[in-house]
Length: 145
Image (cartoon, rainbow, N blue to C red; front, side):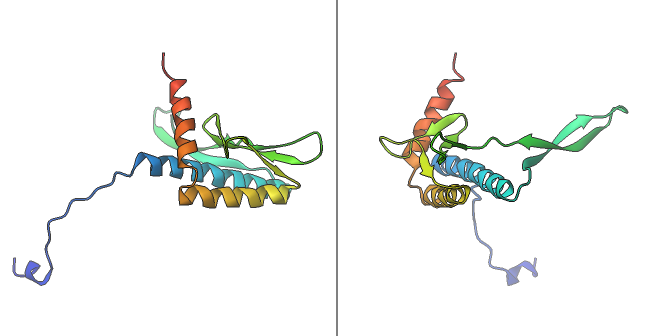
């Protein structure tokens, strides 16, 4: 016990919980990161697929982890006028960016990349918390009976 006297002992409680708003923000930031990786790969002429690990049972009955690719769907599309439209998704629901707009118009793929970076900054700052909450509520309503 004489060894522990050299340390400053305190009473502390470890809280791992984060607020629901911060949790939703983190989920959206992760998905925006996937979209940025997808647009970067598209600009370089490459394919992008998110990698994830699944636990499966092999032919010997052993449970092993296997890396699988998960397709990432683009949030942007090309319009009839040649410009790109970018919408932000929370699950399958589109997050409204303002009262009248649900997408961002971009002239090129580089503009889509830049717009994603700006939206990422806005989400991290908490500017879209109300819109993310509304999309989350609409998404959860779809799971009800």
